[in-house]
Length: 111
Length: 112
Image (tube, rainbow over all chains, first blue to last red; front, top):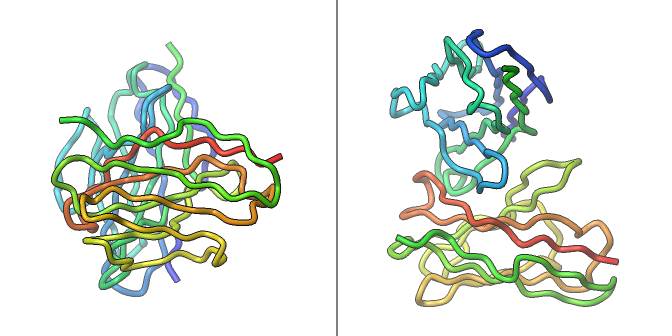
């Protein structure tokens, strides 16, 4: 069974402070990991995926297979980063056609 | 390019009734997935269709069903509605199914 855990429901940081949104997963094979974001009154959208190894809006995430983690990081938080963040996993084979989501972390950046 | 379109945006139904939700994917996308979002359970996978074939199904009762048409548009149906079916139902499309998903705004279903 595949599972994604985001331990923090709410994370508040001050503008300019570093941000780390935690994500741990459980999957027996080789998963693909994603971060999706939902800004206020907007639809859920992809922020980044681990195979791209790119930085989007200053965010990065590294897949750590040893610790089964895929934490999302940004060195300096901005007010526009306030949103709901979901970590998601897709498996292999038929499992690659579905995403298992974490419960989400609401990031609030305090001005 | 138009995004994923879901209709209707809001629905209010009574227990025992059935409901059909519609989803139009982004042009060229052949995979359509459905997810249920509730405050308690979060986002849960319902099913995924590609070229009119269901390739994967989540852990939901048989009251939840779906289909995909030749133009890639998809519908999902929930029969014999229960109060617990009240949720936001999200549709997402992608080229192959294992590529990044593009979500619609959802249909908010309320069962009374």
